[in-house]
Length: 257
Image (tube, rainbow, N blue to C red; front, side, top):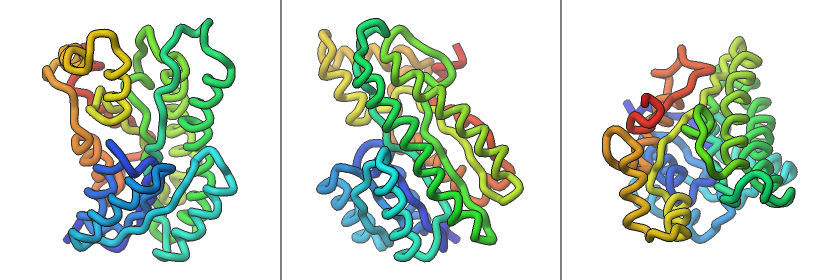
């Protein structure tokens, strides 16, 4: 039996990278998949790929920092698929890569609005649907290795991912008795459009940037989106029924140093 048969999953930031890989994998495992993003064309392409492979999926345009939009989309997902069993809070941005004293308030707030407020709003509007279901639900929040350790760059991003780590633990405690599990996932460097964009901004060039990232990981390579998607699949499935408030680190050994 497929691991998410008869479950409905919402994935934010589902058009690219880790979100795309997660949408495709969860659909392969039987989930009715709500692909959400602000990138409509690529989000629609993910849905088409899922359907070609025999899966069930729909796309919704969603800015996770807009509460009215979150409320509307989640209600529509519930009406379309009958439930919300899994929420993957994946949408996020890296923000401006300058020292703290050079960050504008607007640039700081933009990262917090998407990476922190977005997780809060989606969790807020998923919880009531999960509470009314006998089976509860699973919320998986994408943090980062930089929610555990830090580095001398991207101050707003690191702050946001640390917040997501603790938000996950708080919500795990608040909703455990109602069968709602909340966990965080902490990827190392994964070769996604977000990381590729950082590489394109670097002075040394994309290839040299990628090689430098690879050497930060004891396994000697940068991860692939599917490496993270498989961890998300585990946390979404009933195999993880005893797992809540945890940190799943998938980082090629980065934080073990």
